[in-house]
Image (cartoon, rainbow, N blue to C red; front, side, top):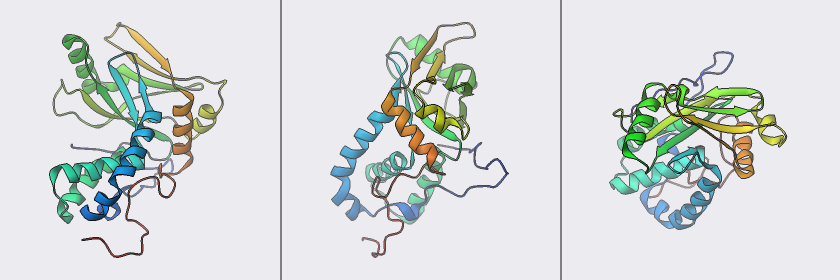
Length: 231
């Protein structure tokens, strides 16, 4: 997955370092010991952060915990825990961790008519901002690509929404709208869905932390541990 980070610098032009590195990842032995409870916790976490726009498009808002879980599962599936591999996948995936003032998400097209799925995939690949947007209060943020898909028909897309630092207040104030909108074609079908309260709360918490870092213990990580790395 080739990635680029259009939101890697703050309003003052200061660049932010990687939100996740290989140093954050557990070794295979330690991850095997904690995998079952972490898997259950991550399933629950993702459920709060997933929004369906119609029956065939889901938007999974990512944070540091979801990315860390994905990285560990990636290493486990590949059966590779060497330093070079972990460094490579961490460098590719860390761009999905939210930066100050933005939200980052995995958009998945699943099922439905093949022609419709291909049309939407092509639109998301070519110009995601014309197809997907989020409204928080009075501000509308259009989707921006952070990882170009391998081909125009790919069903998985990685995007960010530059919602601004005042989005926390908009998410917490239930009187203000929080809506995801999807449009098919230049003058096509428009579908919009309000964010569930659980999703609003989760995203507000992300934006409240500068790099979307989860509270201690919410995800598998080696950082700040004093123990020696596991074998």
